[in-house]
Image (cartoon, rainbow, N blue to C red):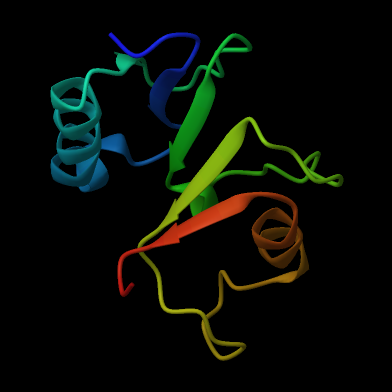
Length: 102
């Protein structure tokens, strides 16, 4: 295991829709030697949390930058998409974003 770095995979809503991506991250990080956990609808304060399905959740409290959260974005980022709103933009601005396109 890599020292002092722990990752936690979670989804607040719709975790079945993201399961393959979540499994990819979980097993990929473990194969690289990182301690990795997975539990839906839970933030682990002792880990870097990789969040799926944040467009479906009300994570409006993410109003300041944080190093403990990575948003795995699987959605198109466009003002025309209904779930691309101010709350979601705030999430993207205040967390590290991993985008499926990049």
